[in-house]
Image 1: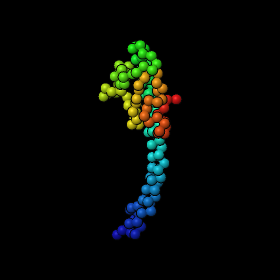
Image 2: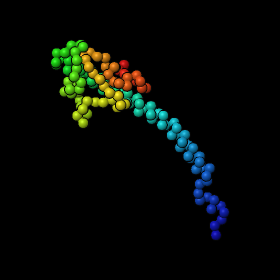
Image 3: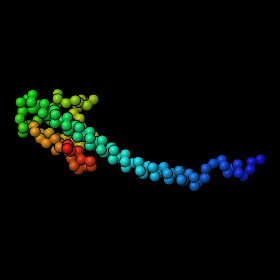
Image 4: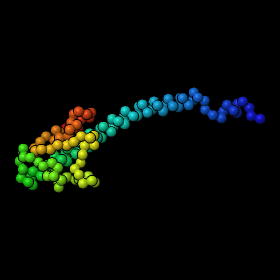
Length: 126
C-alpha cells in the first residue's frame, strides 16, 4: 500500500512550475532586446560594407571609362563588371530593406542608402 508521502513526491507543484516559467520569461526579457540590437548592428555593418564596395566600383569604373567628378553613372549596369555580385547575379542590397541610389562619380557614399540616419544604428559610412 502506498503512503501519502510517496504520492506527494511524484510530481511538481504548481508553485514550482510557475517559478520555472517566471525564470524563463525573465531570461527571455533580457535576451530578446539584445538580440534585436545585434541584428540591427549587423545590418548596418553589412550596409556600410556594401556602400564601400559600391564606392570602389564607381572609382574603378570612372578610371576605366575616363569619367570625371560629376559625370553620370548608369546604375547598376556600369558597375556590374567592377563588383562581386550576389548568388542571384545582382548587386548587393541593403539588408535592412533600404535602396542604393547612385547617379554621379564623386558622390558622397554615405548618401547612397535610403535608410541613412533614419534607423539606429545609422547606415552611414564614418
